[in-house]
Amino acid sequence: MKKGLHPEWLIPQWPAPAHVRAVCTTRAGGQSRPPFDALNLGDHVGDLEAHVAANRATLQNAMTAKPVFLSQVHGLGVVALSHSTPDAQVADACLSSETQLACTIMVADCLPVLLTNRAGTRVAAAHAGWRSLAGESEGGILESVFKAFSLADQAGFAVAASETIAWLGPCIGPECFEVGPDVREAFVKHSPQAQALFSPHAPGKWLANLPGLARMRLAALGITEVYGNDGSRDWCTVSQPSRFFSHRRDGVSGRMAACIWID
Image (cartoon, rainbow, N blue to C red; front, top):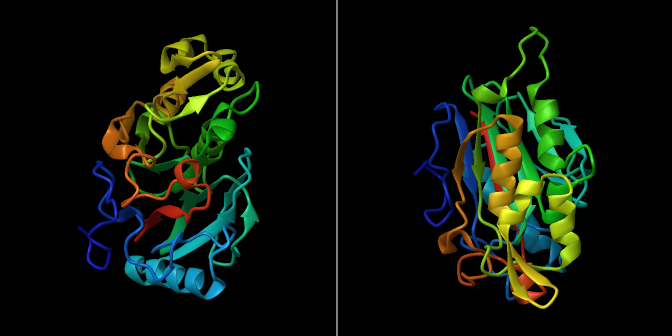
């Protein structure tokens, strides 16, 4: 447990360098009222503006780093952050090599993916809902963010997949994520092995393993050190209403945040 972070927030258990910090919030610790209780960090869900601002200030004070909140559109956009980057940049992933600047992804069923390299010189975060994860013929959000993340820096050093580690946060679990054949086809046409991550559920319906699909895509990039969400019930946002926000479960819901930064 890092000092200042709420004891009910999730701290990744992974071999990141000591100066790379990360956290995923839960419902705990904020000021919002039902149905956004309590630490809603989304300013687009109908919550009071003053409550969202107070909740974001709570997060920033706890991290002692500046979170940058994106306008997420389930797309493939990636933005490189600096301390002058304003909130609401339209993108579904971000990366940074600056200190005290947190790559931040909001979720309420979609999968947050955090990345760093073993040297701790870069960090990144991606919003992996099924649309952005599946992407297009050339790949989805994980392929897009790793392409940007791995590029050579000003000193000429590139980050290899073998030097990259990933952490998957909570999301809708494989027992709850009912999808239609269009979702299954979007993944299978890109990777036939994705068939194993869809289970028949009802006529014309499947249960999809979102963290499993993300692990498959990361492995295809050569990123094999992946920690966090293993698809078990403990990580399922839908199954834990007192702990996690879930848009699929509640319809109107707050948003959690997964953040990673260089201390």
